Length: 252
Image (cartoon, rainbow, N blue to C red; front, side, top):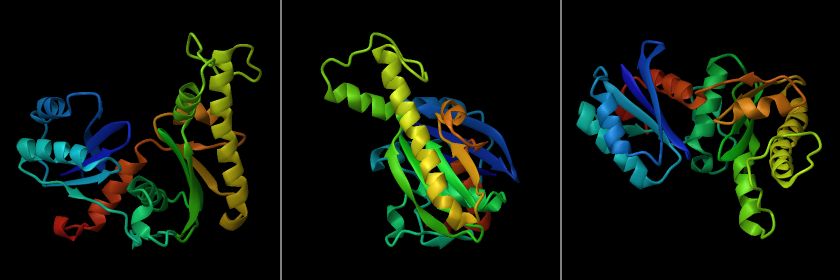
């Protein structure tokens, strides 16, 4: 069994992989007492043979999770860093390590699951977009604020935009709260649609469009095309990586 760790900007997600199945799963926001929560939960979990993690957060949070894994299981996590090529996926970045490892592992999952050629959109703190061709070549991507971060940016940069309640997404809003929510969510939807339009000719004309991240289910109905919701793409990509790199000391 392998314990897989996905340290995202908003929360920590983790799963225990046994063969090809996730037998145990969990997630905590970073506002939780991570050390206590993990110690409590992991006390009842089976012992993994290895711990493999992917992180887009700071070293302090990586260390906190690593200490928890060591205390619970006597295992030190091996952190996957973005490579130039692995698991059939070729990174488009000239400086491969600058591509977020979460984006790379989502492409690993997409290729392994037979969804390529595809456009991968992930909607969370950031909105990320990547194009992956049928041979596993990453063609590049875009990064923008996610819809909630967009709203926070407007609130932080203005004086009079102070809605008194959370807004709803509407075609034509008649109040500030709905106007702010609608503008930001629709902006993200339009960006996804535009990226697909620009990428499609390079991906054979009709790529699969996948949507992941914590806000994927909210954004999906706003898009002009059908999408495939792919939850836990990073954990699934980690699973492919961990099984491909059978020895923990070969993962770096």
